[in-house]
Length: 71
Image (cartoon, rainbow, N blue to C red; front, side, top):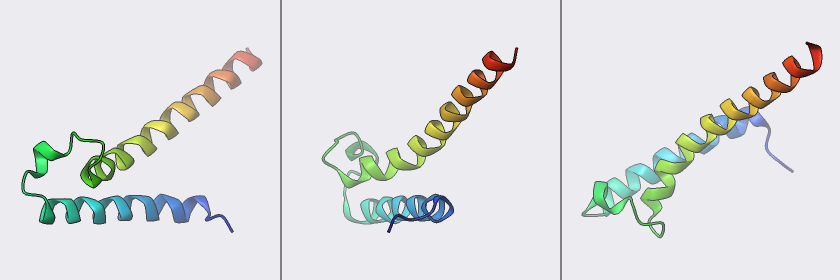
């Protein structure tokens, strides 16, 4: 039932981009209104940034464990 990783890799940025375009077209104070956590704009900017950062630190941790075990 869960979606595969390649599907999520494409789907989440597209949904975030759609939310960003929606926020840009609907909200009057678009750039300033993105600081409120109740705003859809906040999450449409947060998701595309969070996923690559998570992947980077996850791989960094994995690499550190590999280097620690094999040296």
